[in-house]
Amino acid sequence: MRRVIGIGFDHMHMGDQLRTAMTEPGAELVAVIDEDTARMASVCADVGLADLPQVVGAPGSPPVEAALARYVPEVAIVCSTTARHQEWVEALAPRGIAVQLEKPFGHDLAAVDAMIAAAERHGTALAVNWPLAWYPTHRTA
Image 1 (tube, helix red, strand yellow):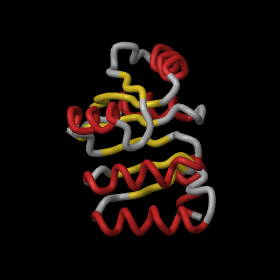
Image 2 (tube, rainbow, N blue to C red):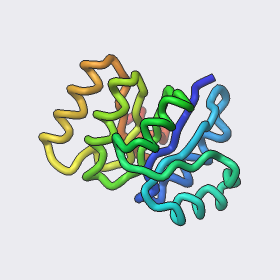
Image 3 (cartoon, rainbow, N blue to C red):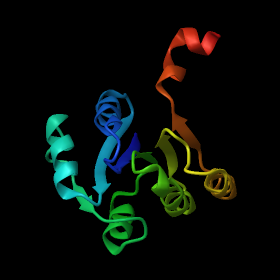
Image 4 (cartoon, rainbow, N blue to C red):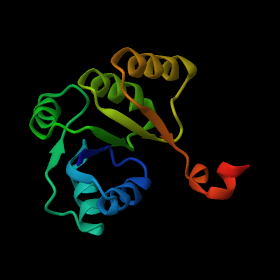
C-alpha cells in the first residue's frame, strides 16, 4: 500500500488528483497540507474526504514536519503554486518521498534543475502531471 499525501490546493487539479488517488488500487490517502484552511477543507469536502487529516503549513514549518513524520507518505501530489514547487521537492526528496507536481514544472530553469538534482541526489521519483500524456493516443504518437 502506497501512502499518499496531497500538498497545496492552489491549482484546481488537486480535487481531480485526490479522486484518482482514492480509487487507485494500492494507494492510501493519509493527509493533506495547505496554507489555506478554508480552501483545503472545501476541496476535501467536495471529493468526500472531509475526515482526512488536514495540516496547515508551509514547507519546513513545524506542523508540516510533524505531519510528514507522523503519516510517513511515500508519494506526494503537489498542486501548490509553481513558485513553491522547488521548496516542496527539496523538503520531500530527502525523506525519500516521490513527488508528482502539477504543471508547469517550475517557475524558471534554475528551479527545474534544482528539483531534478534533489530527486537524483536522494533517489526519489519526480514527475510532472501533464494530462494529455495520459491519453493512449498521445503516448503512441
